[in-house]
Length: 472
Ligand code: NAP
Image (cartoon, rainbow, N blue to C red; front, side, top):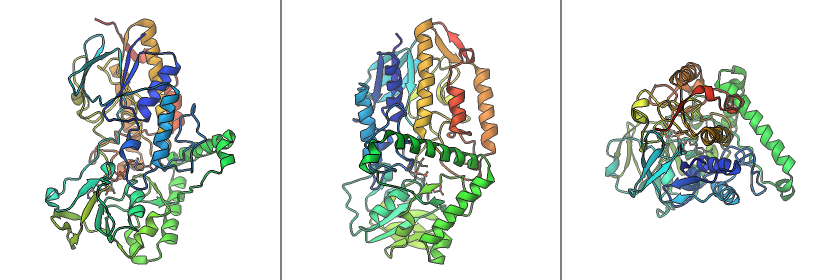
């Protein structure tokens, strides 16, 4: 039976291990650099952290939960859910093991860890996520700031924000969750907005007890949101009826929530919807109207000891919170991965790419979870992860049956990559700057279709897409 080493104990890594365990594979090791499982749901402890994908859809299909308190559950419930799934299937990650490098020795993967330990595996599954490495902006004078500063994904809970002047940089999905939570406690809050996001209502509900136990209601809700997200994807793909409708909903939400025309003008996006992630919130815009909040749209030029400088002057601050996102396009960094005759850094010099987001030519028996071109603009990433786990499990079954390695063919991978680039070039995502791409380069993070298409294309592993590698 092949041995499988999975790097990362977030939803991707745990989901992969469960899939293999359910298929009867026992030699499966999950290593995790942190001391606990959970991935982004472990790391993002900022006030108000939760998921804006409805929980019945943000669950594994084989593990529906009757414990979701609300439709858009907080991160603690999501992390508890993952812990329960891992426990139920007997997945026990090895914590505190950081993978630093991995190389293919002609027959197996040799995996080095931070402590110098070398692990061997027939199949390697990096499942390190796209949003695990915080992105700190490169602003002049950052180190000179006199007070505490931290990134939203590394929230410093030892800093008491009560009564402080707080500067928040960024207005993405993270900031819009923590801004309303910290606003009532702080003395002054300045939100530095570079690009106004589209914000739509968040139809949250608390689940009644009867409903929690009524499996059919959950399944219906899951199906409903699956369908709704598929429609949203059509908008990103260019369906103007969808984009115009969502844009109308967002602008109406803004009108309803922000009566002040000057503030509303600042908060009105100047680009067509879909390019950046649409945000769901009922409390973000009202928080910006509070008397202790100021939305600053002048560009930041420098961080100074007393605060943040823009062309309009210096905004004094006691604390700076960076809600500036993640380096999503640096897939797998900083792990050094060497395949048959090249390293991943060179293979990805023009941007990360992988066949179906999972397989890279020249890297036999390595399959990525949540790899390039698998993120969604609208939908549940867990749906995609389940499809990837199913596909990779079939690869492991092949290795178990034939003993040979699987190396995706160059022509197959190249054709797939050309298709991705062609299709992505026509999407809304190319119209602005975002974490989906480096600068104005190609979009390397996102899947350019519906999840139904991904489901169809990954359902059966086609062995003919691969070159068989006979162990040396
Ligand atoms: P993000 O969406 O990348 O937002 C980063 C924000 O920081 C943007 O507003 C960006 O402005 C701003 N920014 C970056 N550098 C800046 C600079 N030098 N000066 C001024 N502003 C700067 O990051 P995020 O909010 O952490 O969210 C990242 C992703 O995590 C989301 O898209 C989502 O997929 C995931 N997430 C999901 C949830 C959920 O509920 N499911 C919650 C949180 C996060 P520009 O827009 O102008 O670049």
